[in-house]
Length: 436
Image (cartoon, rainbow, N blue to C red; front, side, top):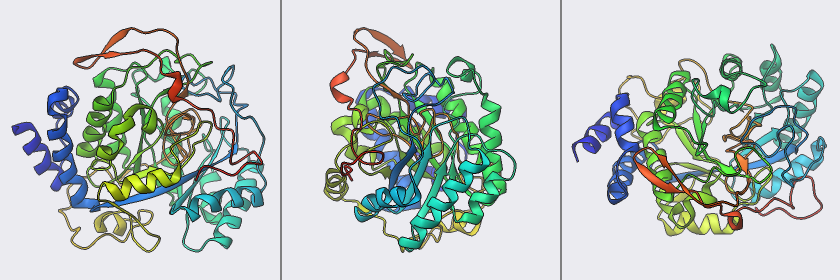
């Protein structure tokens, strides 16, 4: 179709699509979803080949958060039956990280619940970063600690942090509907602080909270303007005991369309499938690898994910390969601009046009909901793919009612699938081995 041909051409040139084109991707039918995946896959392969970057989450401090982010199982007043514990010691965190690294992860995302770190917390995390880097040569470390105060990003950078995650989560116009204890502007400010300190910015979104297509497009365009190196895409996990427990609005096909839209708008950026991958994509997860070039390995912050070996088998069976520590994630033009992990693949020399990810303005990191660096539930480094989505996608578990609601151009079933959500009971904060 003409729309997809136009979007492929723009993606190969790193040219921004129009809002109408982005909305049209979300409005395509299920009958066209394979065509959409094939088109966006051309853009993904142009900038990232067939490499898949693996990331591993370590939840340094779980639960007990004073913020009220509606999507998060660690929120103030949450009744979700998650693990709750205070700060892991540096050696405990390093042992937890080793499990993911042994499974092939290239980046470790250190996440902690809370509004933002105190200076003492930054010191704790700095000690943890040093412990992990001393024991694992070449590892990337992303911190996801919430809203940053002046000087804290610089201290994390000095301690060896490579990146900071803080997700925007949703559009500015609807942000007040999901969180009241901090603002959208607070999140943007933290991303800008991280970027200004020389940290690679990681910032993404959460889909499936009842937002309109226009909201999804708004937040992705806002992310492109901030220009993070990585954009985690979280799919809300409606955790029982949270305000969004009944928001089961996503189908596997809709998730694929959302990922394709993000890839077209941010063609040369690390697009990461974060929280909710197993829950919402289900058996169509391999198709999503044609759109995103990065995933989380194993379990998440407060929920369990697909077994690490199953992830590795899925990548190999789909014809992709795990990106190793010696390879640069970002294309050459972004790497040259200072992006984390950047020597690009051969041939990545596109025009200088604007591309999500050219390091022009801000970067990664939202503490409330997105992933590594976001405590609420969004998703970036520190995001929660399947059942747990505090820092990566939205962790919310299940509703008991079925029905349907309209999302974009289609009616989607909202029957709760509590059988798909499992609270994490192993790994960091426990005496049991992780699912890495």
